[in-house]
Image 1 (cartoon, rainbow over the protein chains, first blue to last red):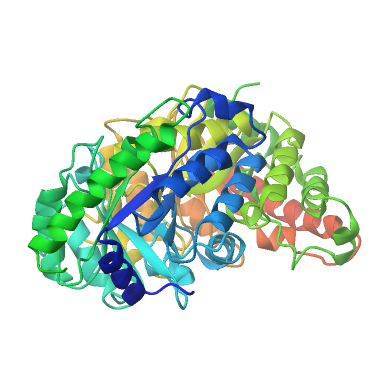
Image 2 (cartoon, rainbow over the protein chains, first blue to last red):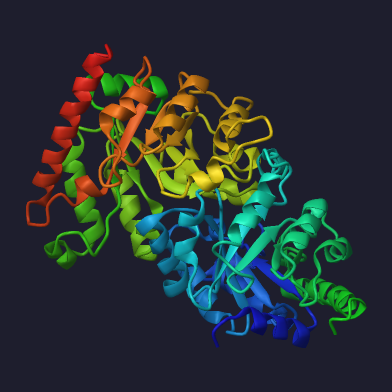
Length: 274
Length: 274
């Protein structure tokens, strides 16, 4: 099955969930007994996937966690991608930006070698750095407002037209992308920005990090970013992955996911999506 | 030997060169006979390094070219880093940007695992994404104005203070970095921007891509960016790597490098650095 935004919307409706699980395996945090297996990262991911796949619509591995482990980390990532079912939207959280043949090479790596459906891209180099990642059935996930504390220092610089940088950027994307091949990263801790971006881009999906450990709130995110197609993918990583530390850590992860899915279902019903 | 900017300046004086060679091995472009070896990428890099190391002060592998090859590409990169002598400044052209533990993981990968001296970083996420890469004896190489055609669309947005985005950014870095732990990427095709950045940051080094295939001119770059410590690292990749296609391609690469080194020596003399 090839990925598309309409398919994602169907999956959200069917699963009553707009959860994306961040697959960020940290060897210092995963249960100790897994370290004795031949591929601890893959074994960890596999159990997390087994116990969350019916409750989420997307997975998002952050490349930093795999690259840190050298060549074997990329092998664990490849096995993980092969293991995730086609019905999930799988995003390479790579925050890449490069041009010409370099960008094309990254795109080949993420799309052809790993078979990701989307990649997070940093916008500072302009459209030249985004276009090589735009392909049929693939989605560019552009950093617009991020959830980190000092993000505003750059992203909220006000332009001579009186608009913050991030909105100038969102407007520019209208020249070269649509709501079918582009999503925006909008941090859960940046609610006023989220409202302004939603006003400007009523139909784009937002990938929302920052709920959970970083302090974002699910209901508030929905208040500011929900649209008639849901329009939100809320990502959670650490609070799910490291919910438990024992042999049955995956049961604890599932229990957190189930709780989030129930909250999401409530929001979907309250907002007449279900 | 640990890297430092004063050491780099000494090396420029000794070698009469401020050349950085971009190590971007493309399996479609390297001589066919190398493809029969067990590690074509490393064999190619090794020959390029053997025949250019006395003529350049830095090497810059672009990660995209290695990641495209999967786990074995990272092995070739590791072998390449181990092969480059300590006297060269070695930059991971990774254009990364991430926060918290993810950025720290990238930093661990590039500095500890590969032993790079510097990493190119995209500034859009603000200081949170830069700080984890700031370490003793390491240099953050921040994207400021890039050499690609549409870079200006984002980088030259004028702020409410009447300053282009890239200058707002350069000014912000004064709060958290110095000319000893930060360089700026300034494209050779962006000369008026280069002058303005030089005015603002008289003592920072600029890493300058875009001379050669992209149309930048060495003398003009010196006219706009040279300072009393040289202050420039000019990167060239394709025009050196793929100067020849035969069995002795490395002789052709060396011949190009020698020509560039001579031009650089002339500029260094004309500007009273030598």
